[in-house]
Length: 143
Length: 143
DNA sequence: AAAATAAAAGAGTTTTTTGTCTTTTATTGC
DNA sequence: GCAATAAAAGACAAAAAACTCTTTTATTTT
Image 1 (cartoon, each protein chain N blue to C red):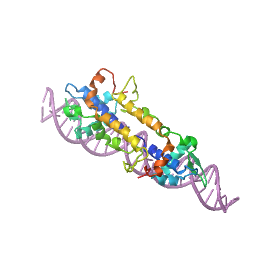
Image 2: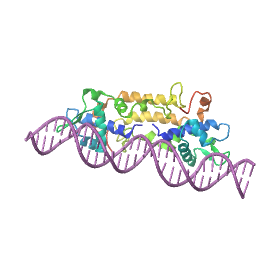
Image 3: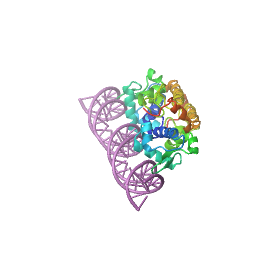
Image 4: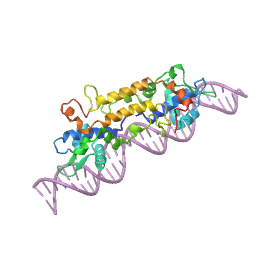
């Protein structure tokens, strides 16, 4: 569904949101440990998200990653779009470039419905909304 | 959503179903032209499906690919499973190996619902069921 | 100012996926 | 039996995705 990069990105950002809920910052090392991902790989991904303004970072001692008020309210869809683009939401299920309402592939309409539901779900889910479940160990970000 | 291999596979099999609806066979060349795919690549894919008994083939002059009665009734889900496995239907949205009902990722439940709908859709769609739309040019397999 | 810390940047490597080319095997029609 | 046809098989090649390592830059603390 999503690229590995995107999976790591979402897990990382949810992790950062939880870890920094009372201010503070979290280092790449801790993120990598917290979501069980390759350290340098997740570093690259967070750099990218940082450049796009979807996560915040600070260098030096006491530095690390965190989310400002705006970032905390971004939806999962925003992060997915930033990493994987919107092929997830609008690409043809059978890979046709020209697939559209007026030139549909055989499963166009069925797929459209599924993809729309996926999009609604991702649009309506805020990245900062999982903290409680994670605290209560009712949800997990690794293994 | 699906691998390129799987996209080609589905398009190819739908094409074969349509082209051979009154008996007869269709060559790899024609399949490749009909769905606009790399000839040798789709050949590999059909070989694989042939080995698994999901499409039928015959060598030599008058040879080619076709679908027997059983294959025509297979669902899209069967072909997807044969190529991409069932990660599409059951894999974790965030890539966690251990994600499950009792050890869920934060979006486990939401994803499960979407994936189930995808599965129901693919299970309830027969590969041989698109012939009419294709004939009427209300659906397309290339461009 | 110097040392320590932590992200940013850049340049790889490895693995997987996608795609190509050549040879072999089976079947048909003459 | 021979030539032609078409799929099967196997070995490569290219591109993309996933991952690693090293150096640089910015910041803080002492």
